[in-house]
Amino acid sequence: MSFLRVVIEWFTKAHFPTGAPGRGYPDLADEVAKHLDVQVTPQTTYDFANGEIFVRSQESVRGSDVFLIQSCAEPLNKMIMETLLMIDGLKRASAKRITVVLPYYPYSRQDKKHRGREPISARLVADLFKTAGAHRLMAVDLHTDQIQGFFDGPVDHLLAQPLLADYVAAKYDVADLVVVSPDSGRVRTAEKWAQRLGGSPVAFIHKTRDPNRPNQVVANRVVGEVAGHTCVLVDDMIDTGGTISKAATRLFEAGAQDVVIAATHAVLSPPAAERLSECGASEVVLTNTLPIALERTFATLTVLSIAPLLARAIHEVFEDGSVTSLFEEMSSASHET
Ligand code: R5P
Image (tube, rainbow, N blue to C red):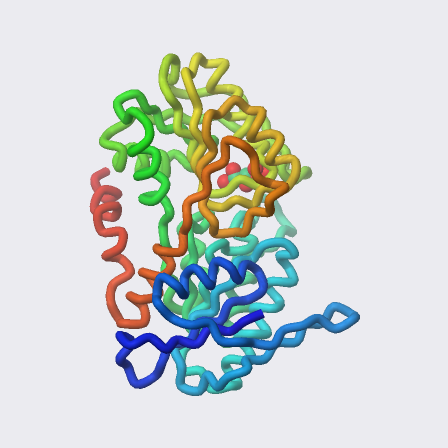
């Protein structure tokens, strides 16, 4: 467990920023630190026999601009608790500002009540971070944009789409691509992909879900023309791979020539690896917002690093620059409706 202390020359402000990675994915925090040309400094973290967590920075953070990088991977609930304790420790140690960097925002799928007596879990998570002492949040590809409003403070919503779309555009014939949303809720995202790819056609899968059983979906049919084309299936996350593999099957049944899957968050709960390697897609392109264990990888998997984007955004926040400028091209395109 380590704590990141920034000692870089070009950070000329009176207070050095500090990066503090949680145990969720320290390698990603290290990668971000390298891009910022900063050093990681140690932190003590351990679990008591009964599961309680202890955290303590080994160096002073007084007056620091802290970026606490925590990928909430499994065990997800424990990582949330660890993050809350770290925020509390930083607050009580007189950090000047605490930005919680969540490459993957936990519970983001539970952002509304589908039926009575359900919690709005994504809202509760935001409240917990706020109560612990976080001043701002930074996250990549929130499940829905409105989650930004759940946190009472600034939220930097970063987009992995330029990274993923530019990779696809460089490798595949864009004139032959159809962008496909795996459900009707993500059609707007597919449209943004299409704009970035220069005006590709868009299709979507009519999907239904059993509200009483998690990760159970039915991909009913393809809406749009995909026969003879290479389909880019886009989603925010792949958990068990049920949604995306069933969508790929429907696309091949509808005559697709090839399917390329692109998604941001590689949750990859079993049996995702089997489903993704057997669904016929020639490539599955994901980012490393979450750690991917070796046993969850497969031959057609490509992982793009999100670290340069996180580093650029952290730099903009620290320098009071513009995070929006990182996505200027996209935001102007998204207003052309
Ligand atoms: C659903 O709304 C999400 O965007 C993903 O499509 C879904 O959560 C992925 O879950 P799974 O891979 O288990 O189908």
